[in-house]
Image (cartoon, rainbow, N blue to C red):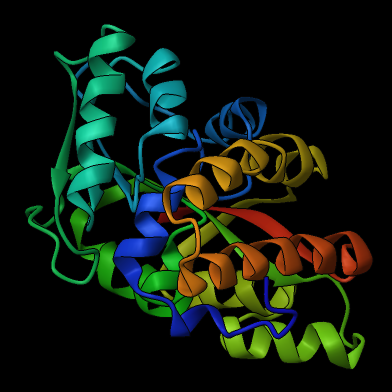
Length: 257
């Protein structure tokens, strides 16, 4: 494999999507963290309507379904993810109230004030944290909640290597107080903010990728692009272990005013 790491933006989205069909979660998280974030959301009933935007294959959505009783719509751009999402809903026997649909987070099909809860774990970066909070707000009822996890800086300054990596991958990365202020400025009461623990990265995100790497490299043996993508994923993992004191994922829960 090449030792020169490319930017994630240089890889085809379909290639990235195929790789992540082999893991339960497409971003850092855990069932325990999903439940913790949900504990800050009040007033859900069997009549509640919820949306998981950028749901992937639904690892976190099935946890939501197990701890709520309303209707959940998962939305993702990739049909492969949605096929697996709906298969997971059938497997966990929640298909009568959990459905995945193909759609773009910048063109959602919900009606104004239709939703009681908007959820998005590790996905709002695709549209941008601030833009997502502002554009999705209209779909929430007054008093409805939004809960999103977002990569954030833990410190005001950090080493150049990790600064350069994240400014290339996601220039809108910022500190926790600034993200919370963006939530408030978008018309929400910031209800809770907490940092995802280390095991959300190591145990639930990076460890399963070892098997995905083997499957991917076997299928695409000799394919330089596939090998470079795996090298990129492994480089990201190394950077996390080296610089995790400076950044991580943070859950932001807000209530629409």
